[in-house]
Amino acid sequence: MVELKFLGMDFGCALGSLSNGQFPEKDCLLPLISKLLGYAIVGASTTVKLPQILKILQHKSVRGLSVVAFELELIGYTIALAYCLHKGLPFSAFGEYAFLLIQAIILVAIIYYFSQPLGMKTWMKALIYCAVAPTVLAGQIDPVLFEALYASQHAIFLFARIPQIWKNFKSKSTGELSFLTFFMNFAGSMVRVFTSLQEKAPMSVALGSALGVLTNGTILGQIITYQKPTPKKEKKKD
Image (tube, rainbow, N blue to C red; front, side, top):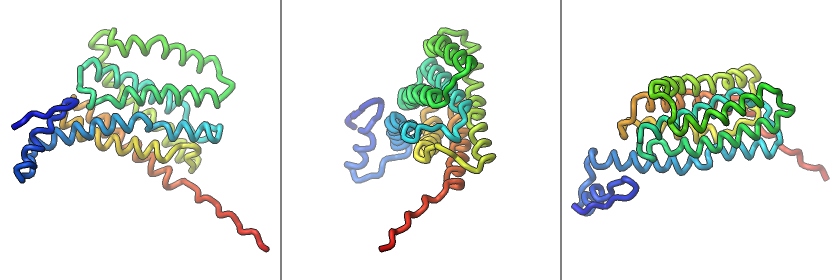
C-alpha cells in the first residue's frame, strides 16, 4: 500500500481500498474523516465571528449584546488555546481557538467602542488581560494552576453564555446577535465533539465542545424564536 500523507492525514489507506473496488474499513476511514473535519473547522473559524462584527459595524449598535458574555468568552478562548498548545495536541484538534481568539479580541474592542463612555473598571479589566494573557499563552505558569485554569474554562464558557441567554429571554429579543455566527458556533461544536473523541483528546476537551453544543444551540433557538419578521414595504398607489 502506497503511503500518501498530507498534514497528518493518511489518504493512502482510503484510496488503496477504493482503487481495489472496496469501501475503506472503519479504522482507516474514521481517522481521515476526523482530520478533514478538524481542518474544515479550523478553516471556517477564520470567519465565524465576522458576521457578528459586521452587523455591529453596520448598525453602529451593540443593542441586546451582553458585554460580560463576550469578555468571558475571550478569557475562555485564551485558556483553551494555551492548554492545547501546552498539551501538544495536533493543530487540527484545536486550531480554531487561535482564530477565534483573534476575532474575540476584535469583537470585544468594537463592543467597547460602541459602549462609550467606558468606566475605569472596564479599562482595568482590559489592562489586566493584556498583562496576564501572554504569560498564560506561553505556558509560563505552574502546571497545577494550568490544569485548574483549564478545568475552569468550561465554567467560563458556560457563564459566558448564561448572561446572554438570560438577557435574550428577559427582553424577548436577541438585538444585534448574528444568526450566522451562532449557527457556525453550534455546527462547529457538534463536529468538534466527534473529532475530540476520535483524536483521543482529553475528555475535558470533548466535554467543553458538548457544552458548546448546548449553549450555542440555545442562543440559536432564541434568535429563531425572537426574530421579528421584516415589515413588507407598501406599494405606492397610482
